[in-house]
Length: 217
Image (spheres, rainbow, N blue to C red):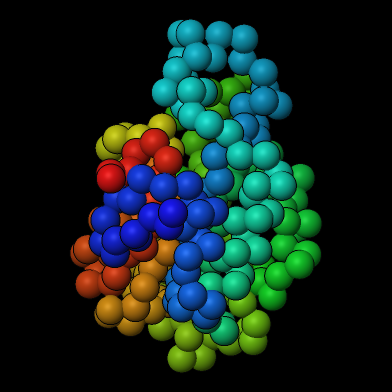
């Protein structure tokens, strides 16, 4: 039985199930924040989930095959020259994520560093940043597709944490305005704290997305 996906709603649904119901080439802009361990497994904090990071460590994790399936479906539903904004940590940034895109028409075109203005965990350097890798579906174009030219590649924004993976609403608003028009559909298949939904509300875009834990029936 198919779930009736609602627009501008916190759908309680598995992201792959949501993506499978979307029409080909129907999405202008997509955000994807995979729930993976990344640098946290690399650092191996022994007391994570006990003294710190309890909410984050309790979230269901995506393995690499699941992430690749998400990306392949996002590739299918994006319009030509549409954009995908992929959140990664510094471990994946250094290790590389391009193998996830081998069977797609998506190509890396830019990178934004998000300075959280808040110090996190770390045995050596303390984590303060996350990274937004920008991909565009073929054909690669900037003129008349990327409309804003004032977004810096280092973005400083402190967020009020409402979810273990809260993201910067103002940055996402600027990226939505840069890559879409009012009324266009913006996708977030692993919505978490629904910052993209709020960004869509503030920019008069149509949101489609959901989460298996934080959604609503």
